[in-house]
Length: 157
Image 1: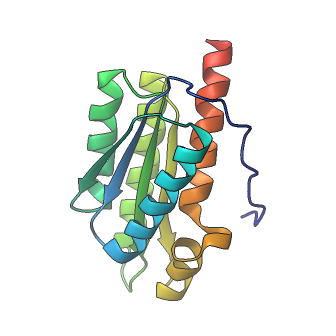
Image 2: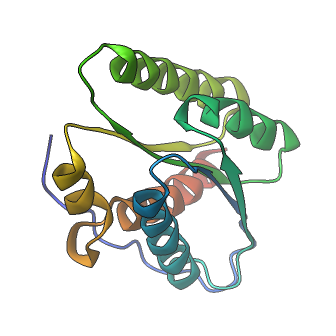
Image 3: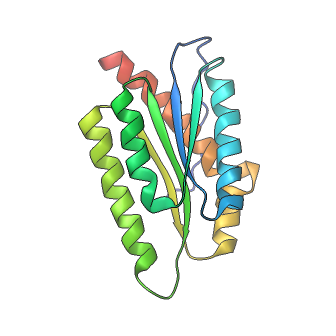
């Protein structure tokens, strides 16, 4: 996996774009930090853009809520945020694989960028590195990807 941090796309003032965030309550301290960084970065990149946040019980439920948002056809990008800690069984990998495939399917079926930041990490140290620090926060990266994808898709649509 690349350690390159995407640069912030140039800001377009009052773009009229709307963004959705679907976040898991499971491992909430990590996910809350992702949400906070995502919202802060989106607010800078897309000044005044409405940002709707929906919480789910866990990561497995994220695709259902992303799909519900996509069906509304009012979001220019949807960001999925969650943290799955690997355990001693295959359960975490099964959830991560199902979520990944579902998010891709939703994005393609509804022609809306779905930014996948449902992280499968080995342990809490990895989660902290990706979620709790400003210098490499996956929420910031997700916001940048969402803003860029929404702009690019609008340009070719």
